[in-house]
Each structure stands twice: as structure tokens, then as C-alpha cells.
Length: 579
Image (tube, rainbow, N blue to C red; front, side, top):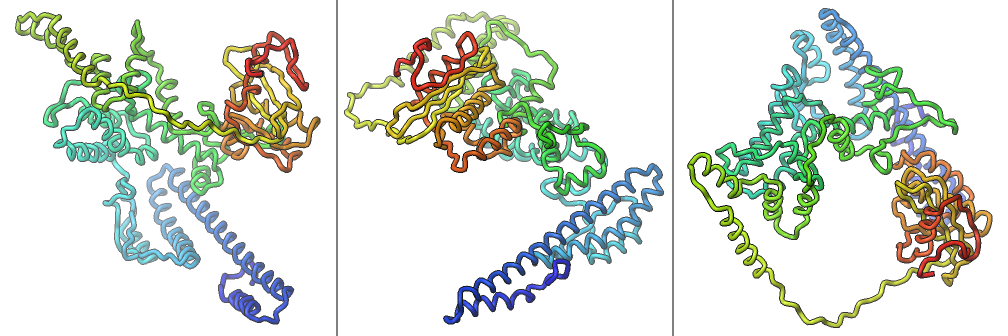
């Protein structure tokens, strides 16, 4: 069977039967079985290559069809030309698409049910063309009124009216819970797990207008502040303040517009990282044929490899929606944050760490923040509107009595100590290993590196310590320490086992492509690993890495350039108490 010929499983089925027959025959030699297996393997490889080429041709054909179709439609300013392009292109391309569909069905044995399928036409397609298109695939149903993955099929008209279904779905879900009379803790769970997640798929595909985002935020805020489902409720604070993270004195809800931007940035990141995907090639043919979607052209590095993009707001350089949302909230928003002196942000954040039910934590947070109608506010209202004076000490006495009751209820009776057999943690058997560590702070002038070679008995055979101009981060310093240890090992020993207490570095070594921000360093590391065919790196707890942990800090704080390799610590270097 030639690679370019049509596929037929019967062409290699007789070879499978031949192999089975040889296995069942006791007189068959090993050479005959090996030769038959080789013939079967070659046939299967040829079959696999055939379908790969067919798939590639089909994808390329779809890209050409889609690109030419979009160009004919969007690059013309004459409505009549657009109508002609639609009518001509639809007939020709419908046939091409059906060919691809039939080939897919033959290859995967998954056929499309055309009786349940439907076609969606534009308003400019006349009745004759519509009927011709229906007759080509045999689909007589017209669609457009249903939904696909929660989004209406017919995307036309006003965007505000089109996306109004988001608020309707949200309000329908809220009204289903109105009879529950949820506490603040229950409302928080409902908002974060259901209501804020409802428009996620739509926001990852479309940029919602600010009016739509404000309508969604208004509906969510009304549900949050309302204590009675039939009433609107008093909004005691701006919704932007409530949506701040908990460590910044907020509840941790998401802002709709900023989250929408973060989700769309994820799509852009995929176009940049996976330029050979089908959707990326279609969009490239229409919108950015001569450049990247970021409107930039990558330069060629000194290693003759094309540079790649990395995200500067994560540790590994990969974009995440969480980091994108942080950028949208903190860097894209030019408004200055309100600063109150003295600040109670830490006290507000501590309210969420209290070991208590969520409704109690919410109450404490509201009391600290002032987002609750306390007696002071009620007394002010009585003074203004009813001319009634109230004693402020009455509230203080009531709070004292309630606090005393709470302390009495939570008083813990001490239990006599019991003898517990606490097992000491086992010490790992390290063997011949290089213990590595780095030290880094954002204010120091140097970064400190250290490696220690231990034998099977745990005795120090050789050690090295040095400092260098401060690197970009602690992870960069750990990687530099590992690289220096590997270079030193090539000169002083033949062992290839390393131990380090930084788990991110181990993950980086085994998952190179997941850390684009360290591409240059990892490329050097890969070149160095060629000299270590049995390279192994393991995680060592910091408690077993005391020497390698203390000396890098000493090297980092040293007042001048330091470089030392020897069998013991020099007398002019400070010593750790454990050494």
C-alpha cells in the first residue's frame, strides 16, 4: 500500500493473520516471526502516515477556504459585492466542507446526523441560494434561534440587547434562592461559586461593554446588600471596595470588566504560544498576516533560536487569569487608592482568619469596616429625626456583658498531659550527594551560593561558597548555585546526584517548556546536563541542609567578592552554631 493511496484495512489484515499463524505453529523460527512483525509494523506506519497527511491537507484546505471567504466578505465595501461573495462562496465552500466531513466520518466512524442538524443563514442570502445550500448537504432545518454552549446562535443587533440574557440568567438563579434567607457567609459561597461563574464562558469569548458589566455588578451587589428579597437594601459601601482581596480589607469578589479582560488575555496568550493551531492560522490569515497578534516581530537570539514571549507577573513566565486580573485591577486602573491613617487593613484582613463560622467572620469584618448599622448610627438618626437622646455608654455596657458571656461559654478546662510516643522524623540516607542552596534578598548587594559534597557517612568531603552580583529573584539564585555546583563536580568528582530544598527548581528542571521566563538559563542548564548522563536531583528538607543554608547567607552579606572551595570552613568566615 502506497502512502498516497487510499486507506484500506484489508491491505494489512492478511499480515496480521500471518503473524497469528506463525505464533500458533510450533515449527516457526524466531527469524520468521521477526520478519512478519517487521512487515506488519511497516504497514501500520504507512497507514498512520497516510492519515496524518490527509489530516494535514484537510486542515490546510479549511484554512485556505476560511481565509479567502473572510477576505471576499470583509475587504469589500460594496454591499452588492458582499452579497455575490456570500452566494458564490457558500455554494463552493459548502461542498468542500462536506468532503472534509465525510472523510472525517470514514476515518473515525463517527457520522453526523443531518436530520438533527441545522443551517444558519445571514439576512442577505436569498431564498434560492438557501435552498441550493440545503440540498448540498441534505440539511433542511434552519437554525439561529437556539443556543450553543450557553450563547445564542444568532449574534446580531445591539450588543447590549444581545448580552441581556446574562443578567436574566443571573437573576433567575438568584430568585431561586430567595426563600433560603442566606446569611452573609452563605451569600458569599453562592456568589463566588455560581453567580460570578455564570458569564465566564461568554467573557472568555467576547469583550462586554461597560454598560453590561455595570448591570451585572449592580444585580450582584443588590443580592449581596439586600436582607429581604423583596427590598433593594442599603448599599453601605462601593462595590469596588467589597471586591478587593481579603488581605486588602475586601471580601474577594471579582470585578466583571477586569475579569473579562483577564479571560480575553488568556486567548491572546494561546494565539502567541500556539501559532500553529487551526484557529490561530485562520485569524492570522485575516488580521495579522505579516506580524504577531501583539504587533511585534520576534528577534533572533544569540543562540540562533527565535525569542519567545513570557509573562512578567508570574514566577514561571506563563500567563494565568489570576495574574491578568491582578494587573487589570492594580496597573491598568489609574485611580489612586484611598489611604486612611491610621490604616486598619491588617485588622480587617485578620477578621477572615478567625476560627469561627463564616457568618461570624462577616459580622466582625462589617463591624471593623463600618459597613453595618450599629447603635451609634441609629442613635444619630433618632437625634436628627426624632429628637431622642441616647446614652452612648449603654452600648458599651451591653458589649461588655456579651463578651463576658462569650468568654464563659468558650472557657476550656485544661486536661492533664498524657504521655505520647512521638516518633522522631527519619533522616534520609543521602549517600554521595551535593547539597546546594542559594541566598537572596531584594535589598542585598550580592546573592550567595553554596554547595557541600557529602559521602555515604554524611561527612563533608568538599565544599564551596561564593557570592555574585544580586540576581533577579531567589529562584535565579538557586539555579545559579546549581549550575556552579555542576561545573565544580566535573572538576572534582564523578558523582551526579544533587539535593536542594527548593521544589520549584526541581519542577523547572523536569518541565522546561513550562517556565518561559527562564528560557536562557534552562538552555545553558541543558547544555551542561549533557555531561551528566545519570543526572539526578532530589528535594532535601531544609532541616537536613543546615550547612548549605547558613553559608550562602554569610556569603550574601559579605562586604566584598567571595570565592572559596576547600575541605573545611575558613577561619575568617563566621560559623553556624551547628557546625
